[in-house]
Image 1 (cartoon, one colour):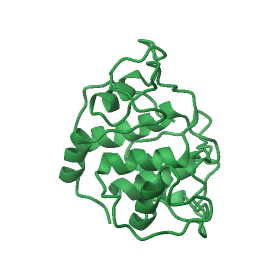
Image 2 (cartoon, rainbow, N blue to C red):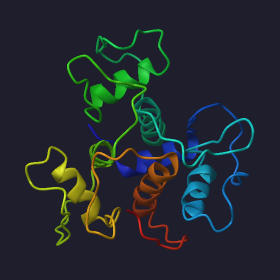
Image 3 (spheres, rainbow, N blue to C red):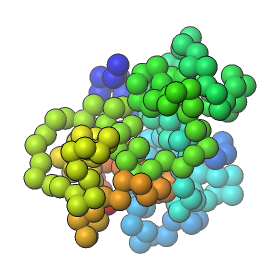
Image 4 (cartoon, helix red, strand yellow):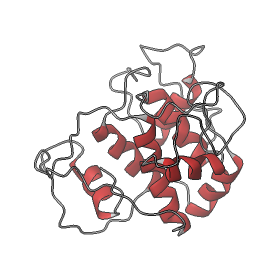
Length: 213
């Protein structure tokens, strides 16, 4: 199901992603100050044309990210073909809906699940869902970890995905040792997680490693 890393990296360099409106990719956004905690990661993805901002030159870092936008970002990053995919026959989207081919692609690839015919495209992605889709999409290495979170146990549906992120140093959890799986995720936060995965695969250590919750 997953693409090999060499193919993925080539696709990353060639592809682009739009979270909002289509604009020319840039590495500076007027709402991302120099000291912003996620500036390096956002610019890393922008420089690779994985993400763009809005028409007004902003990035909207604190806006929540929708499931369909996260799916589109992953599809473009992996260079997945979206044509001739099986029709998932979604109950909450038609073939004319924005991102329908993308939703069909990630369902077919097993990255997102159709949830009984519902994709909930406009629903905000949660941290647990983020962990699951990133782990499924990028086939994170199965590393052992001593990290555990107070609000996640082995019975949680996303436990293995969250632990995979922790084992690969993509998340550290919050200072109170929680993960907050049901908390919604922002555009900046999702960009940081995506950036860390791609940088790890590219052995790119050009940005300062900061705490990622």
